[in-house]
Length: 468
Image (cartoon, rainbow, N blue to C red):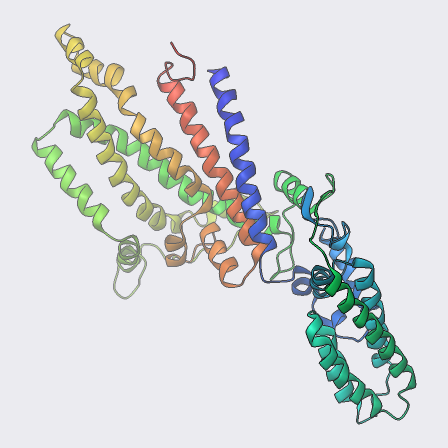
């Protein structure tokens, strides 16, 4: 058993690592700059590239974005191994595109320095000048250029705007230097040869390693919307979801196993037929329709019994007593738990019935009966364990649901759980929260499969990797 468990854990680790790669890659591809989303864009509005870079770097360091993305980079010699240190990202992308066209990083750095000087001088131009607006527009357009064929036209318009100033000497000198750098870049592009592959090793001090370490330590980043740690955003929703879904699934298993056994025992008798028809009818009810019907019947003062006064549940605040919160809202959990229970119960009970009928048709069951064993002993001691295998398989699939929640139920009953948090993060493009939940769900899916394998080995010790 122990050897089997160790092997299953070792097989689960590569799966979790591959999933983490995919989730991290999706997080890095998100079309939102986390620094701007969290701290605002005011520090990038001024014509001060060096100041922007310093301010951005300080804020990126707090978020762990001042490191390389992964352990290594596979690229070409056109790019340096320190490209990730260039801030802000728009400046980094521009320099990367120019370097790809020229394969000459020193010339790209020289061009960037001279462009930064023009931007700095533009920012020092008095606001009272009428030509200031045209100058800012021309220089801003110049800052966006990352293709060599477009540089000449952009510099021509910038020169016209500069010449309209009362004292254009300093800016014209800076523009002359910039044009010289642009000419050098164009010459380098014409002489560029075939790019040579390059491999850069960055070590353990990278964003992925920090993100993966934070996944196990609870440091999952910062929410882009609420500016709070992702751990705090999720923890307040996790325990309510555990209470709701865990209780519903536990009750469903406790009821479905004896119910399915009894239905199999009275196969094709009135109890079996009536129970089967009732379960199929309950399973056919849409969850949102059944929940709405229960709300109308038991929680509406005008049309129902109003046994439950309202269904809205206050959010649980981490740091307060969860058991006090659960006791306060215990009455309001009845309807959502019952709604989930009915749907899951139908699936499990029918599966248990089918599995028991299949097992009861085996030769060893017929042998046990031929020996004169009591029917209860045959069912509980000989048939039950083998009939549990399909339910264990189902449990491996529903295990992540205990933690991830049900969006339909939580939305219908205004319940503050993980399902509604996932929907909110998706709609608001809160990618750190969304991808943290995705990673947790993937890990729980793998854990559910591992738990199912453990239950297989517990139910039947013959299960294992070794050949008997």
